[in-house]
Image (tube, rainbow, N blue to C red; front, side, top):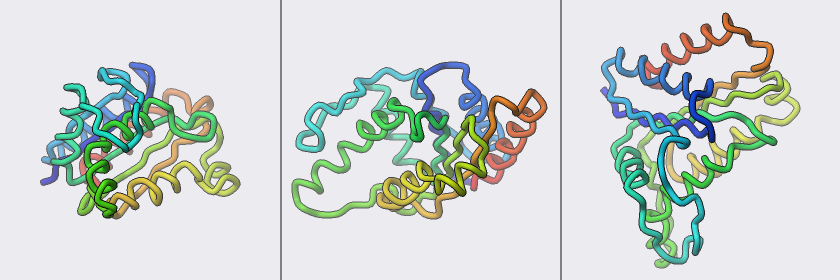
Length: 190
């Protein structure tokens, strides 16, 4: 069984993204996996990486807990809403701060590291536009950036994704169906 880190990158508590994270966690538990759920709006950290990657910025206790969970994870799940064509700023800040210690020393030595090597990942995105429009017209840009330039660059593979579109038209029945689908994915943790 695997250790699963579920990151909900939303600025508000009680969002549908958080419900998706809880559904994935529930499924992972049913599947005998060991899930950890992190909700960015519920943790305390300075979102600003003050000196970029030039110096080490001490991690707050919540970020240290998140870093430990990331190190232990075999599978990473990132859930967030599409806002202005990208991920919420709190999620970007979370990753910048979370990975900063692993990247500063190699950069000082002019070396290349893959701190996510050997880990698989899944990206789950919610949005108001239809999923097909996002995939075909926009080329699933945000997912591609996360898959290639972030997760893949840092060594995670394979990276799978789910897009939940037309959120305003989904209705209660559609939301329940998606929660069940995400729970089933959690049970398999793939």
